[in-house]
Amino acid sequence: MARWAIGDIQGCFRTFSALLDQISYRSERDELWIAGDLVNRGAGSAATVDWIRRHPIKVVLGNHDLHALAVLLGQAKPKRKDTLDGLINHPHKPAVIEWLLAQPLTINADYWMSHAGLYPKWTFAQASGLAKEAQQFYRQQPERFFSQMYGNEPICWQESLEGIDRHRFVVNALTRMRWVDEAGNLDMSHKGPLNQAPAGLQPWFKLGDRSKSILFGHWAALNTPIPAPGVLALDSGCVWGQHLSAFNLDTQQWAQQPADPKDLIYV
Ligand SMILES: [Mn+2]
Image 1 (cartoon, rainbow, N blue to C red):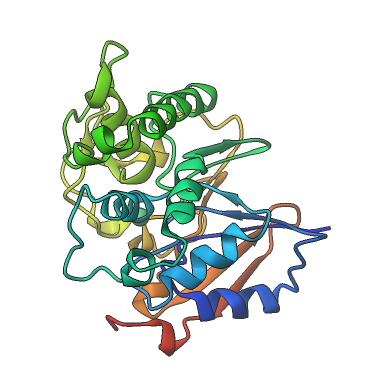
Image 2 (image 1 turned 30 degrees about the vertical axis):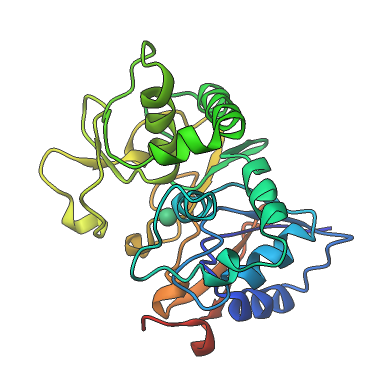
């Protein structure tokens, strides 16, 4: 039995399949964790979702998956570079929506995983509790949540936050965060590499709870698999023509599959 974690697939289904072959993944034997952004920008969003929802995978949702939900629920228009048509016209669209809504935003086990990482002011348990609260809210009132999900405010956590503002902050921190200032304010405008730190900001993983190792994706420009001790960066820029990575949770080995050109639309 092996346990592998894979980063941002973003619809690169051919590359994903080749990576599973490379690591000899067998669903009846092995465990697979996927760090979100299953869909969008690559050619095979629907194929990726269809394969994952037929297998026993530990998935967390990323910002692109939540955007896909907003579009599928009619609460957002597709953006120019979106590759969500296969999901929008999916013959089992209601089942796809139901499956996406049922996937968590964090996994809290011997490793902790979310798409963007751990907000420095939260413990692992607190972050996972807030994630469940947000998910419960958007499962119960999907139209209300997804029509108001977009936006960067509030930029800092306060326990007193309520309603949509509270859940928007939680979702932003878990799926879009990169740079944070000393006070815990999120900056959503910079995406660059570590050596281009914006003034007054540091990457989220310089601070915070390290009682277990963290798996995350979302930040392809980091270009380094272990940017801090116990912090495992799984997004190696597949959809931008680089690699899809898998990390073995037990042996700490990495496997990399070069992006299949047939998956790529914007390269
Ligand atoms: Mn992302």
